[in-house]
Image (spheres, rainbow, N blue to C red):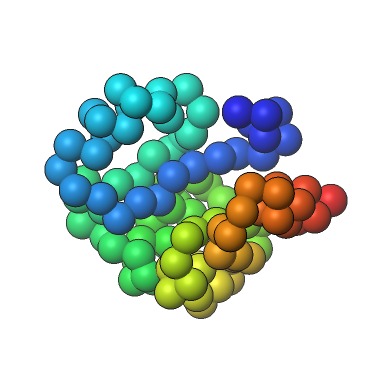
Length: 104
């Protein structure tokens, strides 16, 4: 939520039916993230290029302006393949540091 004044934040998730309802109930993601793109709704899975391209379109963003974070290297590689800057999340401190560096 602290990033919202400085950057758009979105979710691109490989998911199963019911993910939106459950994650909204548990975490209230829609208060922070826009758009929220679930694969079971879009029919597009990471690391397919179309999943990232759809996200870029929905965010009205250029790939070079997007910093993608995932917990799987193959998904970070997929983001890089379409021109996004991407990292694999290892721990909160290093991810926050990487975000701050990107936003400079």
